[in-house]
Image 1 (tube, one colour):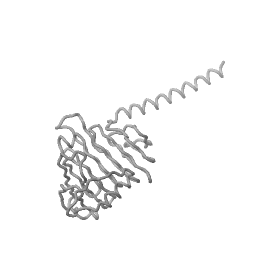
Image 2: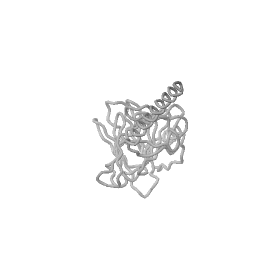
Image 3: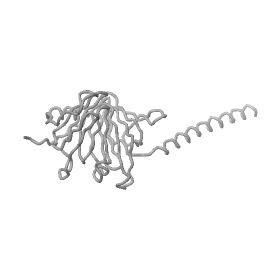
Image 4: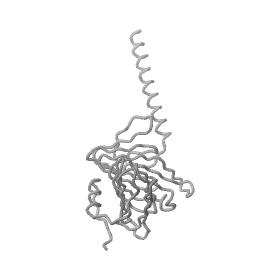
Length: 232
């Protein structure tokens, strides 16, 4: 009888500890703000909230404000935010979802994402459509101000290439403003882009980018599309 009691008593403590861990995890997850989900995933990607262990992502998994999203080599991911903003990341990329407020209130809604490295593509959603200045995409060397658009590019710690491409809704005017502490350029013609060669240089004057360059960026995200680039 004594042995049975001890065994049962130990099992109770084990179950109690597991329940506490599950409750703690649930409370942390519920405290985080859901901002979207994983639309598609090829290869391996992870998300990590501050002061929490990273979690491996799968299609349809939720992502949260302050998540650091990373992809491994030969991997890519598509993220769909609640306002229909979409981000795609290629191989060995990193994105920080630093701020996302979506209350369908033009005064409060805003989104700020920082792309730390890798190839990327994004298509703006309702927040940028209603109030373009409410969305910013940061990189280590420049900030991209949005005017309702679709953008692709590649960044690392010290350089960036940012290209405006034809919007999905061709009836909308498309433009971006790329700036850092050394200068600012505005790009309003699809197929044109700018380069920041290092952390001490301004964005280069807008220039027409080669279609091969654009397709190479898209290919690196394993998401090749036929892109309409205006001809001269």
